[in-house]
Amino acid sequence: MTLHEQIQRDVKEALKARDEARLRAARNLLAALTNELVAKRQKPNEILSDENTLAVVKRLAKQRRESIELYEKGGRPELAAAERAELGYLEGFLPELMSEDEIRAVVMSKKAELNITDAAGVGRLTGAVMQALKGRADGARVKAIVEELLR
Image (cartoon, rainbow, N blue to C red):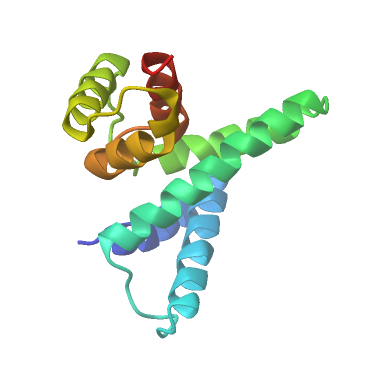
């Protein structure tokens, strides 16, 4: 069963269980997946691959994190709580992220491989590390580690 099919099943299960928070999150994700299908010029009732589904989930999770931050700064804790609930659902589909030590080891390895010695190579090194990690690490954490090591 693909992730897309699992999300479709989650909508049905949340409806039966009357779990409004999970239902809202699953429906929002399913709508984003349908939008992705349309953007890729496929039929809306087709199934996205797991790779494309994960890309959509990552994008939505990032949006939720940004929304939570903005709502908290704006003094809207009730809206931040709703976004947190949806983020919790989305994070259930994301692979576990690497620890900082694991990321640091990959950065050091790529730094030696690419022979980067100064801050001018931050972008090149960050790109190479992100490509090597293939979504198993947050880009902001990778960038921070790269900048720290190249100072």
